[in-house]
Image: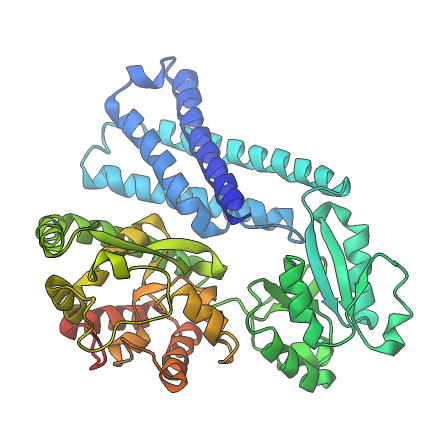
Length: 464
């Protein structure tokens, strides 16, 4: 399912990039009467640079995330903002390489206008096609509704009336007094709050809507604990008292004010800046370290038979699995997906592996993961899948670490919390620092972590 979603997004990104190139060809024919290839090479360069930037930047403006329940005008605004960012970067580029005088400003304006129109029309066609499909019962999203008082019944009614958004109420948890209002026998009833998380996991639920008033604070607090490992969107539709007390991000959703309870701070424009800077730094680092990487690869090959890189499946953003890269530091026969961690004087570690581990050089290939978009330079360290399965039931909010991209370095690592986590207390301390980073994220904090990592590396006496 995740693979299908990734392939679908890739197709959308390629289509948008193609639209940008098509706009350049159309404007060249209309304005100059010549095909793009027959003009000065700068026109071709700007067009394809714009396409490459669109391919890279558009996901950062949330153009490929679900727009169910949101205003079409907001979508158009996001398109214009994203396309404007592409134009600004392209213009800065042509000024940096000193070819601005060769390029026609009028052609540039027409290209931008044509691109904006084509991208918008394309979205309108897709948007309306999806609405038609969802009206026919296709491309739906399963929802668990918690609470069936006035707000809960109103949200259910709106989901039914605005069926083009494709929200399907799969199950409802509510009090016995509220249950008699449920008229659809096909909707599952969840008897107790403990069953909500189980239903979400077993039925691939996409969203949870909480329509409980602030007066039921104890139940909301209980739900926050029980749903700590739920890697789906959780929306709270508060009452008037809840709205006045909450300081979280609120938005208009299906015509009602909702609060996103588990959306991290590294989202939106600041998150876009973080993603762009991550990829630029990762590219520069990989270029700079190409020769040292070759030397290390030769040493690894000499130390023991096997591949240069160790690859292992980890959980990334929202639980999406990816292959993490490291320099291989152990003998080949010992490498498998197991819970066993390296210990002091571990005989499995090779002579070069011991040096790579103690200096953290074994982690450097993860800049490839950053360039691919699986990781960030700064973020919670990704743990082995076996560790996630174990600790998610032992520590509160453990899985909330996966609401952001994992990092090469992080707040926990520069504070000495690196290496073996052989006790619950050690992992709890690391999670505590990870959650501090997520809830207090800023670009300045990222720079601080990068600075301290570059200055003194990762500290910690329990690195083997």
